[in-house]
Image (cartoon, rainbow, N blue to C red):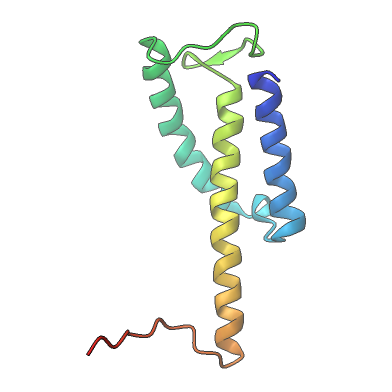
Length: 115
């Protein structure tokens, strides 16, 4: 499997997790796109440095070919998937905690007694 195929597979899997499993629909929220825009700037900066200085190299047969700031475009797919999975997971965990709180369940961490 090539780097490009893995990038697309990961992207599709994370979209399914967001839309069907966690059902946060994070990709439909403006806050996601703002967060992704911030992350992508730094991702391109670091990818440009690492690939421009040949710290990281890619097999030309394993990528599509187009590059942005020296890095293959597939790296942007991985970055997108990473941000999406992180924010969708965070939203799902917060949603569950808020639901428990509304139902009157104690969600606070209890102090352990070690006396």
